[in-house]
Image (cartoon, rainbow, N blue to C red; front, top):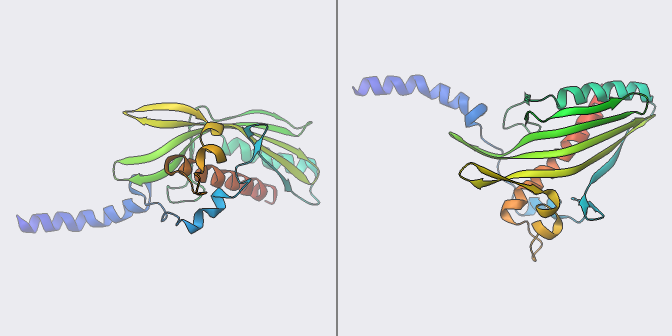
Length: 216
C-alpha cells in the first residue's frame, strides 16, 4: 500500500509543479511592501477632472504619419478588445481576460478616432480552486494624428465582490479616488487599495502596448 502511495506522489508531483506556474494554481508575484506603494498614493496618480476619474496622456510617435499610426493602433485594439479573449498566464504583468462586453465600439480612419469598451477581469490573487478578482469596465478613446496618439480612459467602474456570488457595481470615483482610497495617514485602505493598484498598473500597461504597436 505504501509503495502504491509513493508511486502516485512521484507521478503527481511534476504535474503539480507545472500547474503552479500557470493557470488555476498560478502564483502571483510577491505583494508590494509599504515602501513600494508610494507610487500608488502619490498625488495625481489617479487623476480627477471635475470630480471624475480620467486618465489622459499623449503617446508620442515622432516622424510617423497619421495613416501609419492609425493602421497599427486599430489592429492592436481589435485584438486587445476582442470579447471573451485571454492573453498570458496569471503571473504575467500584462495578463488579461476579457468578458463578453469587451469590444471596439467605433473606429474611423478619417477622424483618427478609435473607441474601445473595456470589460475584463483584473486578477488580485490565485489560490488552489479559487481566485480573487474583479471585473473592470471602462471606456478607452484613442485619437490618432501625425506623430501622436491622444489617450483617454474614463467611465471606469468595478464589480465588487459582496460574497456568496453577489457583485455590486461601484464607480471608480466612489472606490479608488484619493478621498475614498487613502486614509488619514496617507496609506491605501486595504480593500479599495488593491483596486487602485490594479487600475494604475492597467493604465500603464495599455499605454505601453499602444506605444509598442506604433513602433512595430
